[in-house]
Length: 553
Image (cartoon, rainbow, N blue to C red; front, side, top):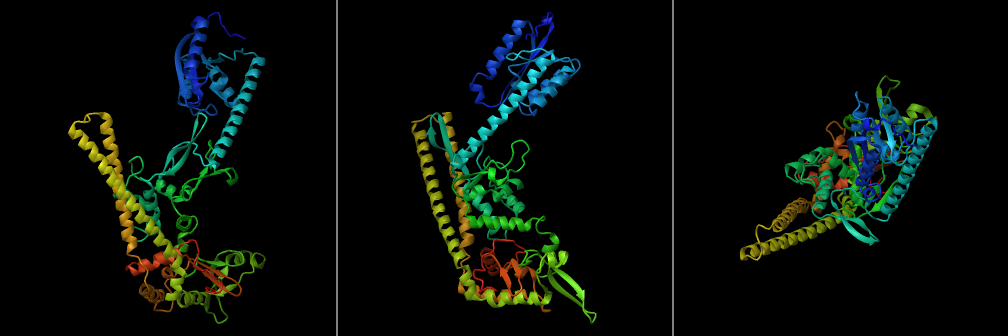
């Protein structure tokens, strides 16, 4: 039905044009095509076109569209800037039937009508119902299209192909294969920034060789102070460092479709697509970083546990239910006060919750500390436990040496290429004012400077690890000093020193299991041998040095 009015010559029209993607602009609903049809439609009816609102790359499923909001504001102001809003189809205006009706009525209250050049209809109840039905269909079609597109993108990711957007720092996008007119792309390691990622992990776990381990804020300051910039040449922020330390992409598992596009709510694991990419960080290092981050999280490890006076609070657990063993006090028949560890589940719920045992505090403290002194802090035992970690560190050192050699080759090659360009300029073969030549020289210089910076960092890492060779004498000295420093003059124990050696204690009916991390143990040994404190506070690291039940119980 045509809404042509006898007084149409006085009507002022506003065009609203929208496409949601650049792909759509290549089809019959492109902005130029919508504009051409809209202007012709207004001219044929004698409407005066007063304004055009153009929205590019915006979805019609919500109202977060700048031009849309500007148009609504103009249409609801008093007096309104126009009398009708002209769209190609109602789906250009909104793909949500509720929102469509809301804004149609909002404009109508100010005397402004919404009309479609391809779906013309009047204002009687039947046509209002038809418009609502069409809006429901548009909304359904939009959701179905989104579902199919997301399914295709998930499958694309599972096959190892990149779906778009900026890749994580340390990676770059490369063409992988051609499928018809589409070029499939994958991620490969970016040699210019991969070492920056490795440096961040090393600083978090090992420090820079002159101090202890660095936290997220300290790493941010370290990089910015040394002018190690982000990929776009900017300064680092805390969120960027934390994202790098927690991103599984670096262990070869990029997660796609992790959050809802609309509300950013995390999706269940069953809906997440895992995309295989080249690995930058080994899994053991990544797991150790996650454990350290977890242990430093105040929501996981309260400050009172990290700084409390009790030796085993926060690392002692019931072997039956996994609940924490907490300190309890009581009075004996003689009036004296005694202290003991008991299962927190049992203390709260009684034996129906857990039948875990209670053990005097002094007894368990002496048992754990004595075992560490007698069994762990023996040079031969330390050598056995740390052999695999030392081997891995040596392999990492070899990889760094190979990478350093590759960087030096790149620097030499770049210098040679620059030299040839300079020779060509001097001989007059090329024009020195050629903008392409200047761009080429600037690119080579940037490549050389980045390679030099990477080489300096790699050399620093080699220098810091090269002095950490573990010798038999070092093991003997460490074992002796650790035994001495762990004990206090009054017969007690230094809490921080003990926790640098053991990170979890489980109490069962007939045995006590003590667990620790090989990596933490090696870092403690190296730090103590270099004159630093052997204490690293409380850790919830991956526990690996308790290799056999019989040898560490």
